Length: 106
Image (cartoon, rainbow, N blue to C red; front, side, top):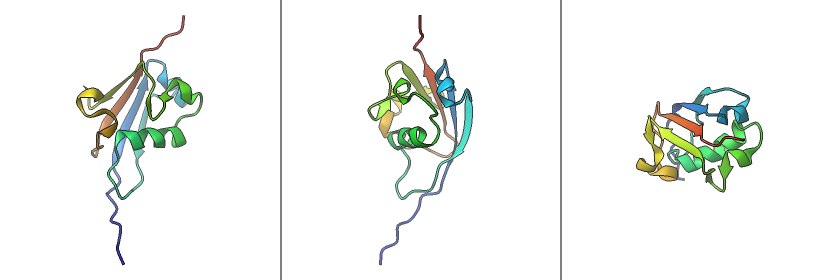
């Protein structure tokens, strides 16, 4: 019998700015404890979880495929996610992830 060990669930703050917060009931800051799972959380799985559990409307304005839509800037602990490995970045306890929409209507 093999046991699947569960990684400790971790607490994160997610911030939505630049209009992205409108897709999340206007709430700019969310403190979240992600559920325990056998593999460490990465941004790819986080985005799926956000879509299922937090996103309130118009997912096409936030997500494209398995990533964020072009025009959404993602910062992890104040660093561009491109420097952190983008979708493959493994979340650490107390990480802050900021999503900023740079898309503006006219």
